[in-house]
Image 1: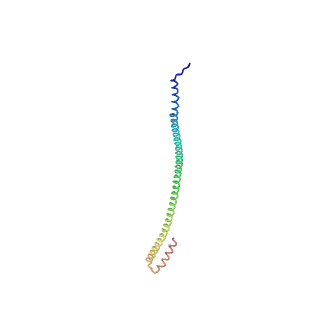
Image 2: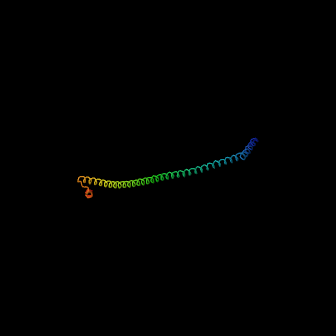
Image 3: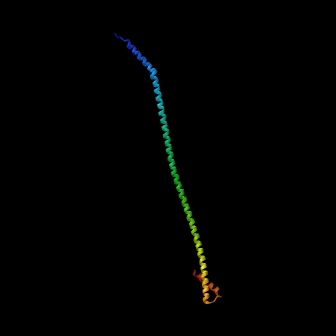
Length: 158
């Protein structure tokens, strides 16, 4: 028959008891710690992914705002250039108008001065001609009629 050795049986019982005790006091707590650590790592990874998603959305918003700001700065610069060009043209037109007014005043003043000088020259020439005619003719009493005659001559010459 079969004979079972008692030592083998005790060894088997010891192994089973040791396995149960190790399972209760070692494997379950170690598994709980490992599961807790795995949950902590999973939570940290989830938080990191959420933070990354927030950072990506913030970056996209920042880039959109930056593009808007660049577009706005270009628009403002173009408007400023257009305003400056309009102001430049207005100032040039105003300066040209003032220059034309000054030219017209100067022409009018020159014409008045020319007319005045021509009148003075005519009077001086008339007086000289009358004096010369009086000296030539020797008659000083008829000088008034000579002046009238000379004025008539000048009027016909002009």
